[in-house]
Image (cartoon, rainbow, N blue to C red; front, side, top):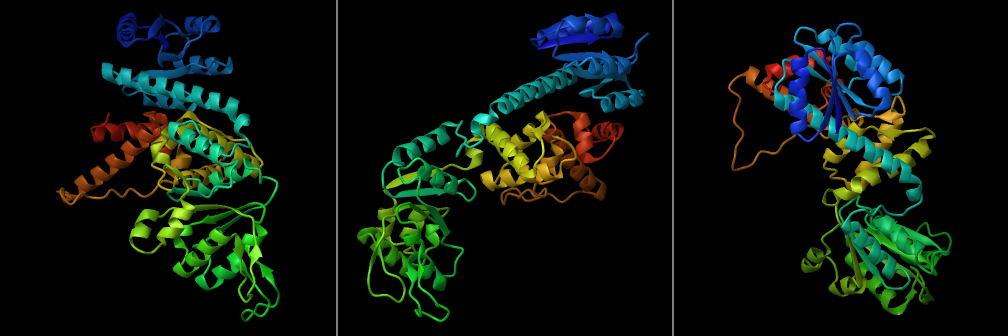
Length: 450
């Protein structure tokens, strides 16, 4: 990175220059804020380290003029202990972070590296936003090797009538893959019909799948075609097929073998031409071994297997997927929205146990509740799970020696989490925690974290 050091102390300028150059940065220095502004007019810098208190123009005025001139460099203000008010004012005016003097070399390097990471994230967000139109109507985001393999399998199997079994955890996008296969198939102009086999009572499921005749049971006041007939010529997705009761598994197997269905209450068969796709979040092989799923039906469904990995195993998809989902949520909400670099960092750090569905819901919530067009890290902290860490049986929890120790441990955990989510940006962490920057610095020193 290119860094500009602005301080009236020549010794400090020299020491910071040596420290940052040794860390691989290109460093320049100016002794006054006015000279720094003039230099920034003709030369681009990524980061400016600027003292708050300087003769002539102070750091606050420098920051305001730099921002008003459209300056893009991140400004990190430096201030001696006891002068926190000026640093807090600088943070409110858009400074990226604050270094209290005297500072340790490792503290300077950590702050600059966090700024560098923030700039990388900002560039990544801008890059993804520029490309989002290409993915406006895309079925899947496939940046990772695992998802490129899924897309390749879906593309290769789509032109054929072959039965496909799609597996993966809940929320990984199994129906999205099924719809993509249908859209790439010769049946794309016909119906795509989906049913969740676990969402309909067993007594009603047979009629839903195969249809029923008038008078077949109480309430059957008219003939009704089933989903197989409605999907004839197109594609039928049996979602959560592992929840299908055993008696219906026998009838489904017959439909696959004969290519015909018999409505409930009728004695004759009706021909159907259906491309069948099945999906399940269950361990289907374990269901077969436990005699809860018929082995012969399993082999009929598992002609081609497409397994969707969980989101935690494909982090390369997370950035683009977040921006695409954000664009879609913003269109639905009828507003503009963009992710801040800190928000993207927060998204990267979440486990997303609910996979793409959880991510999509979190982003939609962030868009709906956002006060302005830029969504910050706090939007995703608010939707995080409670702080519940399981205790290993081999390492039983140690009871705190005192109430103060327990409170300190809880505060340290919350503050550390906020710093992690904010990418180390103390101003952002203070905003997430709902405290002033002065209070955060006091807590960091009190807890031994700063």
